[in-house]
Image 1 (cartoon, rainbow, N blue to C red):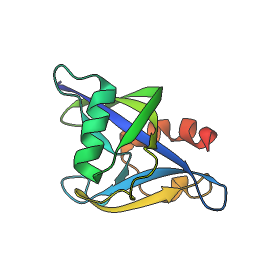
Image 2 (cartoon, one colour):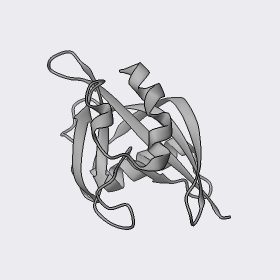
Image 3 (tube, rainbow, N blue to C red):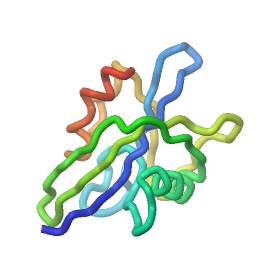
Image 4 (cartoon, helix red, strand yellow):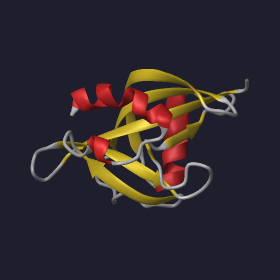
Length: 135
């Protein structure tokens, strides 16, 4: 089975009310249209996961991030491929505008109470408990 190596940005912020939130996006295309995920994408040859995240977030959201520690790696078998997804704690670079949806149909800042209210992609579900504990 083919393995696809990706990096996912788990982007955190503190809301105006003081709650910690994480950014999620809703797919607007493909087999998993309307499902939610953490933004990111394929790690290209010669890229570090952090470099891939910077490139993917710029391409998908027209935003710049600062990638921090690796939260974990998700290994998941979809019917057509094996996904190896490295997840990193990230923040938006200060002073920029809000992310723009260039590839996704929707986005949301979710807190501990709302994190599990959206329909997550199967691979992203695996790391949700760890992320919930960070909120």
